[in-house]
Each structure stands twice: as C-alpha cells, then as structure tokens.
Length: 128
Image (tube, rainbow, N blue to C red; front, top):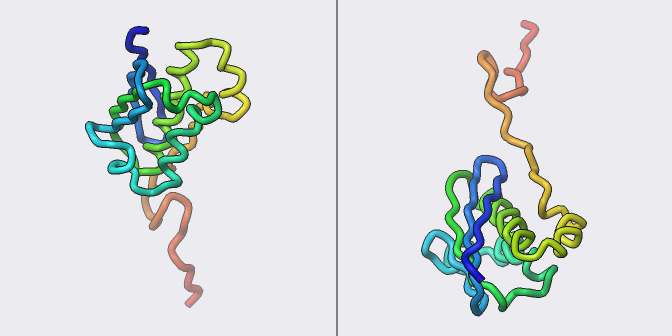
C-alpha cells in the first residue's frame, strides 16, 4: 500500500494526514500523540475513526496540523483520518458517516462588530 493523504478542517484548524501500513504509531507535527495532546479525551477523539473500524494497530499515521486551538485541531485530525480511511477502503464510509466523522462542522467564530465589546454583546445600558 502506498501513502494515502487527506485533509480535515474544523474552526480555523487544518489537518493534513498521511497514512501508511504499519504498527499503529501516530505522529503529530513530529511529536508523539501523547506529547502533542496530553489530555486523554483529545487522544480519544483523534483515535475514534480507527477504533470504530478496529484498525488501531494496522496503520502508521503522520499528521501536520496548523491553526486553531487544541479542540479544533483534534477534531480536524479526526476528520482527516476518516477521509483517508475511506480512500483506503470505500466500504468503511457508511460506518464513519453514521458516527458523523465525515461531516464538516462549519461553525466558526463570529467576528466582533464595531461599537460592541463582542460579536453580539452590548455595553451595559444606563438610563441615567
């Protein structure tokens, strides 16, 4: 099997993934998964598509992630891994689609408006 690549996005994070056959090693920005995401919850999010298809120890995964925070990065990585696994085996698409891993979550932060402290928040009203 040759190297398979895919792209995943969430908020302002972009994750590029490269998958090859191997022993289950996950590398993110030249760091180990546990070093890059110390939280077990975020590690779980990244591994979700592999656990659903039960191929956790079958592929070596290299991820390049830029932008955003840790939550957006982990969810972008999940989407990229899911898309790459579908490229490898198209029969897995229905299982990943049912879990919602292939659907792009397009919610982004709303921009701040002039004359307001945040996007929709207004300054406190004073009658007198």
